[in-house]
Structure formats: structure tokens, C-alpha cells
Length: 325
Ligand code: AMP
Image 1: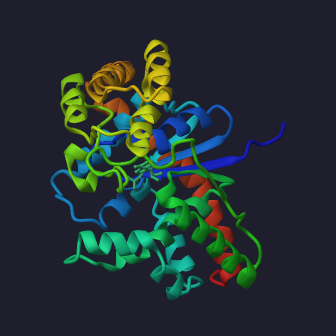
Image 2: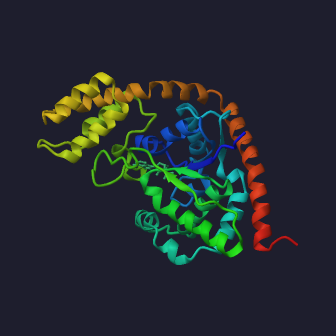
Image 3: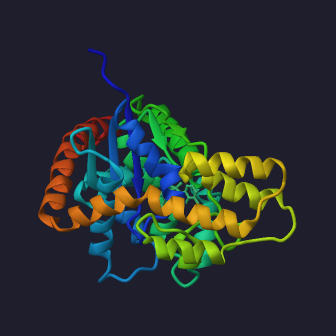
């Protein structure tokens, strides 16, 4: 039997997931689990590089596990695990630090952006974030990494780090490719020049677990224009294409082509369609929430499976680096 190729990706537990995370990453995870050997992680170590309330962190980790499972990730098909439960990730990150030039990290746009957002907390972890990410991916010798556009620079760096390591110590790591969806960058509801992000406040995004009334309120207040503006139209049409009912898609597509769309009408239809699209997700999530022990069991089993591979990779790495007596 031919061994399936490996996919790795992770999401930080740092608050509710939004439709940008869903269309850029999570929806793709669910599709990929049927074709590949998949590892989907909750990147809790990455999330503590940002400002956070420590009382909320355990719930954020648990909530992200609920999101993964309710969206359709199936622990029988893929490994779902929490990053900090596999200590080999930080071990490998340390070794990869020794082959990563500081100048490469200084170029990272996410570091520059986040440094502006949290100027009183520009910590070493934030700077080293992409090296831990490279360790996550290379640990499982991943062939592909499903991510949104904002992560492409980090995946490019992961390829370089793999190359630096292989050239210096001998080839172990494949260079992973990024796997992006048709919608790798969903823009903010309130500012069409910025990507949708939790860090711009709850009005700027739609949470995938938001109740229909909340979705409706947020979309009503979202960007609008009285004149024909192609970018703003296509923002809504893209969302309609992904979440809309067939009937609404056809109706607004015709209106869009004849430049005859009324924003209020489009927004109301879209809000209803997004609410309906995520109704099964919300239902499943509520059921899972009642059974926290089952969710924790899935995470523990995921960590055990991941550690078998992680230990083996570290054994190989330590030998190559000259740390085995
Ligand atoms: P993060 O919250 O940074 O861990 O992001 C989780 C995943 O969602 C990553 O693969 C990101 O690239 C993706 N993502 C985040 N924001 C967006 C967005 N606005 N549009 C598309 N994908 C996104």
C-alpha cells in the first residue's frame, strides 16, 4: 500500500474562530482529512506570545477543540492535538534556532504587524514564532500546509529552514508546500483594506459560532457604499458564493452583472445564509460541549499518536546534530 502524504496545520487558541479562519483554513482541513495523513494542532504555545488573559486560556484551548470537531474533523481520520502536550516541538524549535539567521526573522511582516499591535510586549517568543511553526511542520515531515495568505511568508521560511538544516547536517526534512483555498484572504467587515482578524475587534468579523441575530447585526453595520464599488461588491459576492443558497447566488449574480444590487437586500440575504450554513455546526458544538471528558480524551489520544512520530524525528535529528553519545 502506498503511504499517504502528510499534511500539518495549526490554529492558535486565541478567541472565537471567524469566517476568515474557516474559509482560509478550517474548511480545507476537513476536506484534506479524507485524502492525506493529517495532523491538526491547537497552537497554544504560539498563542501565549500575544497579550492574553490567563484565566481564559484553558477555555480557549477547549473551545478550539470544539470548533475543530464540530466543523467536521474526525479523530478517526486525523490527529487532533494540543501543541504543548508534545514537548518535542519546543526541543526541535531550539535546534532549528541554531540554523536560522536572525536576518530572516527580522523580515517577517507578521512580527512587524504584531509588534505594532502589542508594542509593550514585543517578546522573544513573538520574534521566534516562525521557528516554532517550522518545528511543528517539519516534525511530521509534512508535504503540505493548508493556510491562509497571511502565513505564506512563514511557510516560505519553513522551507528555507529545512534547507539550512539539510545542508548543514544531512537531509532529513522535505520542503513543505503551502496549500491555499480560493479564499486565502477574507477582508474585515469594517475596513476593506485589512484582513479579517480577531485583533480588530468583534465588529470586524463574523464568528463561526455566532448566533443568527449577531450575524445579522454585524452584517448590517458592515461596510457599504451608495456608489458602484467593485471591491465592496465582490467582498459580499465572495461570501455569498461560499455560504449562500443556490437561489440567492443566482439572483444576486444576475443583479451584480447588471450593476443593480441593493446592499441592504444583499446583506440581509447573506446574513440569513451564513446563519443557516453554520446551523449544523452550532448544533454539533452544543452537543460536544456537554461532554468535555470525551473532548479531552480525543486530545490526549491525539497527543499520544503525535508523540510516537515526534520522538522518532527527534531521535533522528539529535543523531544528525551530534547530540547522541
Ligand atoms: P491564526 O488565528 O493566526 O492561528 O490563523 C489560523 C488560520 O486562519 C491560518 O491558516 C491563517 O492563515 C488563516 N486566516 C486568518 N485570518 C484569515 C483571513 N482573514 N482570511 C483567510 N484566512 C485567514
